[in-house]
Amino acid sequence: MRNIKILGIEYVLWLYVIACISWFCLRMWEQSISGAVVLLFPLLVAFLMLRIKGSLGSLVVQPEMGGSLWKYELGLGVGISLLMAWIIVEVKPMAFFTQAANTGSILSGIFNPNPKEMVPMLAALMETIYLALLATVFAIPFAFVLSFFAAKNLMFGTWAGKATYLFIRTLSTIFRSIEAIVWAIIFCVWVGIGPFAGMLALWIHSIAALIKLYSEQIENIDPGPVEAIKATGASTLQVWRYAVAPQILAPYLAFTIYRWDINVRMATIVGFVGGGGIGLALYQQQQMLAWRNVGLIMWLIALVVWIMDLFSGYIRSRLITN
Image (cartoon, rainbow, N blue to C red; front, side):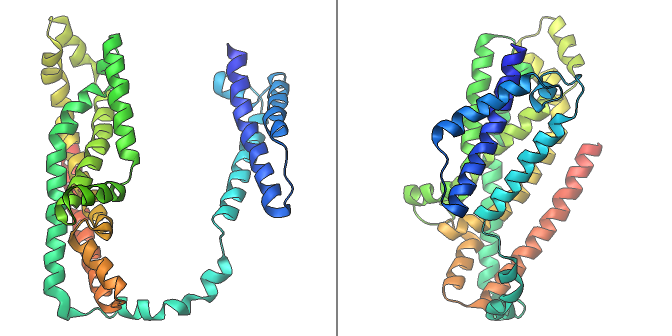
């Protein structure tokens, strides 16, 4: 079994390396490497690595084994990844340093905001803040309850618990991996363009994100009180109520405030697809090339995010300290 694990790790690593080299040859010189070579050559290298001490696979499976070959393998993987990223992203340093003049009108508008639009933009900004607040508040009860079912230390006692844990974790991961802007597009079609669609998008994303934060906090609690209350014959709900909840309430509040901070920022992006708030106003002004109005909106957003960051940071520090 140990050799199979090492073989699997080495095969995945060298398959990645050979696949990257194949893509690089095709991209740069239009020379293709056959699929059989890409699939079989890493297998040959992986078998060779089984006989060499200190490979990356052996380090992962048996950390106590010596050798330094894994450093070169890891360096090769990182180096190829950086090279691939540079080519795929099409990094152009010269364009960055020589074409800044193209943004002259935008930058002049940003640093010369239009104060005449202050009142309507403040109204849109307030809409964004309350949109984010509702999304956070509505997400709390769902995330709070589901986080207990997504905590490994509470659910791995039975097969039913394991199945529930995997289901909740998988579902939250899927919902969290879909960005809020995508949810906003869905809800704009569902309930119409406006702040309600934006709130629903942030609500769904917040539930998934808070489940992860909350459940990981539960997994890090002190097991002593849990074991003590279980020894008295308490039910599962009583264990959660008297042993788990007191240890997590302060971190939960800290995570919730932090999530509200995040939602205020995300609400701006959600507005670009019709989710209401200051983001929608920003998109409209940008489409009209009204850069002074765009500048005003950007400064207002920056000010609110800065205040929220200070406020949430202070509250989190006080809650965690106490």
